[in-house]
Length: 453
Image (tube, rainbow, N blue to C red; front, side):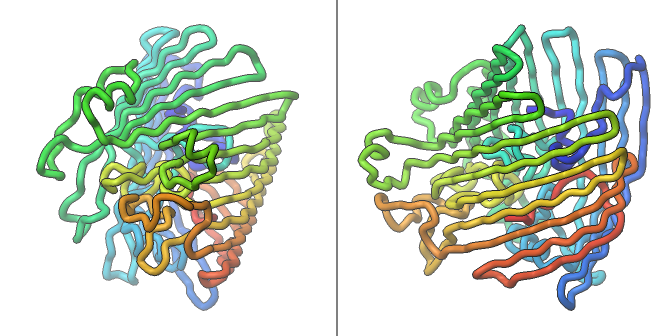
């Protein structure tokens, strides 16, 4: 979990302002954030507007801080408007509120992080951040798709090992109407251990549990202290308590066979029975996700070239739960892949950066089995898996089949945390309306709007 780069959108093609970006004992850096991005989609003209600031502080060698804030108004993109209508939230921003002025949706984005390094072995974090686990464009373990979460994190390093624990507060607003009245509290505890035996291999094991308030009042903030233990394994604790909390295991692998080339993969296990898997029964409870990819990263002073190819596979009902309150989500957005479950995806990315100027292109082919005829086929993580229509014979891509091709070309010139950008997004689908979006303007580089799935 790299808290330091959680403030900038995808780290593959962006250079973030790190907390330790200077060797000076003390420093203060403040810069404005501006978004003024007109969009054109068919006959629909819209805009993304925003204003805010980014600041980093280094008080001494041990204590550092960073904060980003932006007030946003969004209107016009059919993909964006559809997401707001369905989820009542704006991607990695959070709750969306409707305004009467020109039909804009408005929201406040805020993230901050306080970092304390008492010695060379231990690092402490506290703040409101997004996280990204993995080496690829997507993450099936934990991604920067959802809004920032309040958290306290502890990292310890000893030779080839690194151990991390994060305690986070999540928000559920799935059944909240109107949204600005109530939200429900949920929590996440996240453990990871990383092993790097040499320069070409890194193995990371992750264990996370999502749980809700132990109270009859779902809006009451009441924490289960059992999960405060920083070194426990959740499964024995759950068995001892008879708990039905939502646990997910993940494995992240990174190989560097030659210079500049990285092979990476992820495996996520939600539930699994080997006997049913061997017999190919299609048992609904065999919920898992697999990622594989290759990345070429050529870096020279003032220059960077990246080429990536990636494949993602997620079984139906993965990340979902019997109680949607404790699914693997936050502010109505998935904590892992933004598409949820029951899909297959192949994507590629290429990027060239020289000084502050960057050209990038992305393309993806995406297939997903959607819910149909009031049947739950396992794509929506906010639908209880108890509403499934069968226990066996469950296959990936079951349901109403969506096929989508997405291509994105973009040129940006970045100054501090604001980019002058020009780009287009082309989408072709067998179900939804195909579209071509053209955009040009200023955009604060705080987060991605993941609409390429």
